[in-house]
Image 1: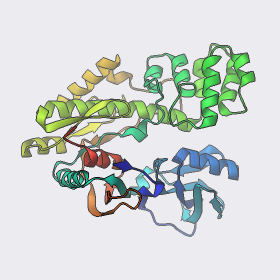
Image 2: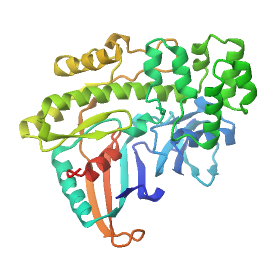
Image 3: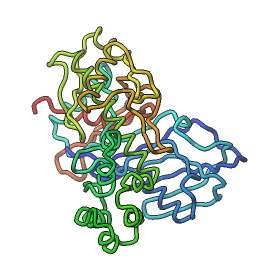
Image 4: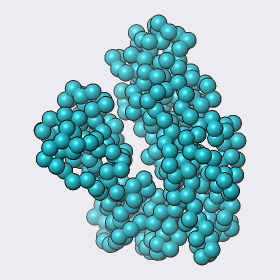
Length: 390
C-alpha cells in the first residue's frame, strides 16, 4: 500500500466562509501550492514582493506533501499574481479585515491510496464503515509536529522548564528528516561549533541562523535573547506543537480509561504511541462523543472530573502544572485558548475503486470527504490502512 505516491494523490481545499468584496484594505488571494508547507510558500511570496511578515494573514497550515488550495490576505496587497514551479497565487477580491482561522469552515479532501491488494482493499472499505459509526480520535496528527527533530524533544517543553539554551539548540540545530540540504549543512555547522560563536559565524552562510549566531557573538550567555529573535512563525509552531502533544496525551489517557483492551489498538505517531478506539458500545460512544477537552493553557481553567485528572497526570509526568502553561519572556506567542472535541466524523464521504496504473495487478482506492476545521485527514488514512492482522 502506498500513500502520497504522487503529490496529486493528496488534495485539500479550504472551504472559505467569507465573500470577496470589491473594496477593503486587505487583498484576498487564493494560494495553490505543491511540495511546500504554508510557511515556506509565504516566505517565498514575502521575499518576492518585499512584504513585512505582519502584512500577511492566513487561516491554516497545509501539508507540504500535497496539492493544496487555501486563502490569505495581504494588508494593502497588490492586485497581481505570483507564479513559481510550486506556487500559484492570485488576487480574488478584497476584505475589510485580515483573513483568519475563523474565516473557513473546514477542508474538502481527495485522497488516492495505491498499490492495494484485494485483501487490503476489502479491509480499507470495511474500515470506512467502522469510521462512520465509531468516529475518530481528534488527535493533532504528525503534521503538527514538523518542528520536532530527531531528538524527539520539544522546544516548548525546554522553554517552560527554563532551559533556554536547550530550547535554542532544539530550534536551530536539532536535525530533522524534513530538512532541505542547505538547512542540514547549517545545522551541522551549528552542532559542531556550538558555543564557539565567532568560529560558528565564520563557517555559516548568510542565513537567519547566522544572524542569531551574530547576536550570540556579542551576547554569548543570552540564549533566551537569541531565541526571541527567531522568526515568529517558527516560535509559534514550537509552542503549538507542545500544547498539541499535551492535548493528545490527555485524550489518549481518557480513551484508555474508557475502553477495553479489545476496543482499541495502538498506533505509532511521530511523537508518541497513541490508542485508537473501535467497536464502542453505545454508552461508551456517547461518553467519548460528548467529551470536549480544553487546550492546555493557564488561560483556560483546569478542567474537572476525569478530564482534569487526566490532564494533571499527563503534566505530572512532564514535571509541569496547569497554571505554569504560559509562554514566559515572549510577547508575541501564546498558548491558544478554547477547547477541542475528543472525536470527529468525516462528512460527505464517497469512495471509488479502480486498477492502479502504476502498480500492475493492484488497486487504487479514491476517498473524498469533508472535515471540520482543525481535523486531520491523515487520521482517516491511519484508520483505513490499519491492518488487524499485524
